[in-house]
Length: 175
Image (tube, rainbow, N blue to C red; front, side, top):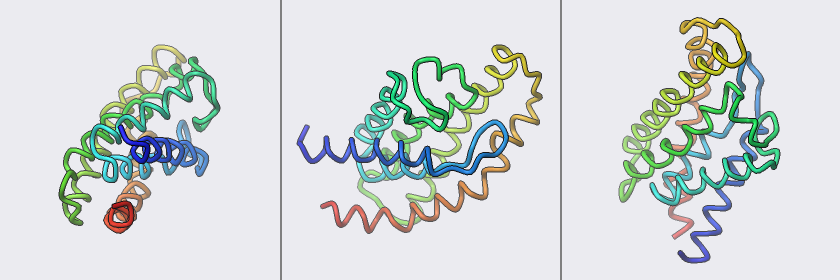
């Protein structure tokens, strides 16, 4: 792996960490820029390196550095929002796979929508299980869908549009 690739992987991992702190708290989770930087990692680095950048980010948090929205450490796996962090890895991979060799608006937009769907497919069940089985909060599936996804969708789509418009320009600058 070249030094340039390692720097880009580290840079996107750092941006994802920074994105955790650019947040608006809402209920049991927060609006952050993490997904936007995850999508950028997949688009700009490709499936493999994009997902590696997210693995690096999560491992840094799990070993104790406070890079997640509410700190860090291994006990963070018991936070309701940790499933969304796990979802960043396959989201970056799928986005990178779909966008490989084609950075058209429609391809990036579709890839980001699919990546977001994967993120929610992992994050929402995790949130439901942690809240209901570990924390003892009796949350309905409807509550988790509303406060774990629906209120965030407008912001998610805005982040996808920003990513779709910026990434082709950034990719050209990186070549």
